[in-house]
Image (cartoon, rainbow, N blue to C red):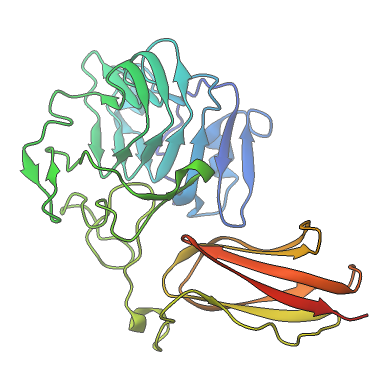
Length: 316
């Protein structure tokens, strides 16, 4: 399902619609004239993992002035980042517009004046819920400058953290690796189960999380019906020595951003076997070295701060 109900006016010179984990990067305007065209070219459901990147060139999204688009647009499940403006509203700028903004992540946006993440004015009254607004900057009001009630602590959420009327919290969201564009939540994040309790449940059946990426809390039975691994491990490749293919198994106790790469003895990467969000359980990857010279190679797997290396030998 597409997450934008109507076309948005987008002013940044260069933007990317990035679908992480083995997907396509759609460049706007190099490949598509508008962001909407880029979204229409993506596969159904992809927009829940979509990044809209302003590339520090201008605002990321500018809402139309008071027309039906500005009143009906749904912006849901996006990571809105790297917007920059000498005025106000680096991430989203609304003028006489009232979009619905749900489960979005705002990061790295800046404005010289007001509202680095979001700025709305002149009777704009957006409905904002379950969003993380973190790491934005402005001359005044680094995150959102939208509503006098936004950011005013008046209640506690289901996790007993202090929040405003929109269930926004002022805590570190504990992203996995924001410096490398991974805005998934770590285990223990205050954003888990902290969304509006009236929102639809997350896909794992738990209370809505805050942000563009929910943290899966599926039980062992929900995944496979069998017991999940207790820890991150990389098993011995089989066969080893090998020619020309071998299989590497990596066990994940929980869904993780997994990287599995193969290096030669000089440290040069010769193959990438995994790079993206991977489900819990034991995953198998086949390494085909038919085009490589015989000798020693090293397989390195990493996920959520864990890493391990295994030596393999190609015999020709």
